[in-house]
Picture 1 (spheres, helix red, strand yellow):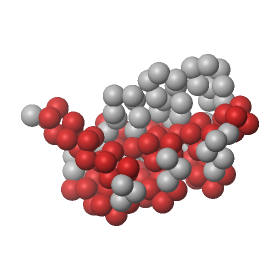
Picture 2 (spheres, rainbow, N blue to C red; picture 1 turned 120 degrees about the horizontal axis):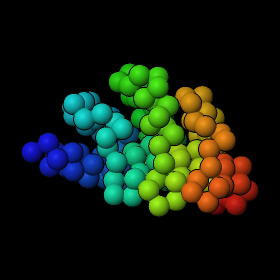
Picture 3 (cartoon, one colour; picture 1 turned 90 degrees about the vertical axis):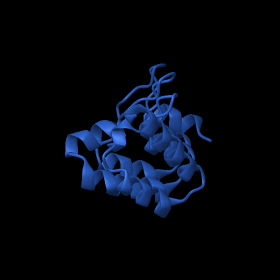
Picture 4 (tube, rainbow, N blue to C red; picture 1 turned 90 degrees about the horizontal axis):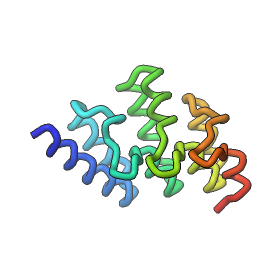
Length: 133
């Protein structure tokens, strides 16, 4: 039953991110607070924060980080922000750098994003920023 609930939460929350529904997303996450943010990961290894950074959604990223500050320890928040995707090892900072979003990159760094992290190809945020979107 717990696995079914997590799959439902993953599907619903990722849909809310895709719809850019920040308020609905945070409300839904609060109602389902028994499932920690770091457990909401899709088949690609994307967290909700990865998905929001990939789509360059600053408002949703800020809302997710604010919720993370409320519900996670400082270390768990940093670990979540620095989580890596499955196939390429991208962190949220890799995505914000690729999108050329300094505001989002600063937000992630403020809460512990590792600026020296390399993806699975040995590329860090500066390399990704130079490739750009």
